Length: 258
Image 1 (cartoon, one colour):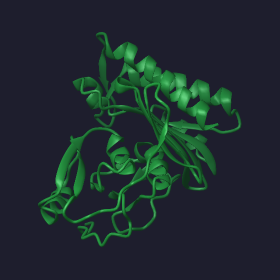
Image 2: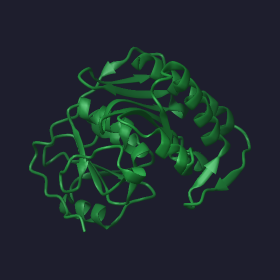
Image 3: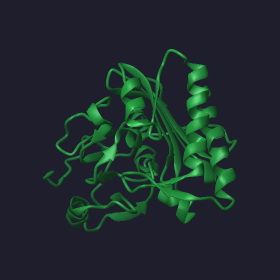
Image 4: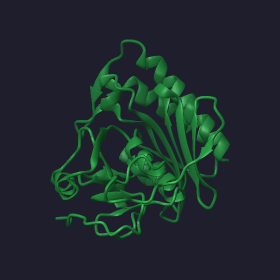
């Protein structure tokens, strides 16, 4: 089924790019976040495609109403962010993704993160590893790297870096720091281009689930800041402070969550 989910994510990305290249309207949702035609077009396509592919598995998408989300949550469901990084989409940075994950008993067991602007796709499936594919090139296996004190790389959110991120950067002063949008930050950890990504500003489950599976299958971890497991299907679908680590065995000096 992973091949079909990759295909769906890429076709959703094509729909996003058609709008990306032209003039479009931008609305504001109740939570003050932006909403574009591209968010809705991707949502409609993915929801329809998944419903046809697996009619017995409900879909929970960011662009559904709260009532629809609650009605579709269960032991097994698709969790979708049709356009992760809408601000990056509006700013024309290209750093936006399509995220599709399968949640089973609170765990992300399959995940696809597709970057339409550069035709880059990451995916992982429980017990089957993590992969990356650039355009039409053959997919390659990816693995998180072992951390070394003299060659540290920290990735941070472009728009959502909080005080704990600054504390982490102060702890590892010699580390290279990269700022980036969307779930691509997690993917840098999964492919060994970064060691750690701390997010102390709250996220929603659809922001993290697809990349969570990829990072885990690459040998890394995504947990709450206190190292408790990050689980899914929580009431309200909201995450607390989280941290993605490529090398869970490294003796990290992490800030304490408030």
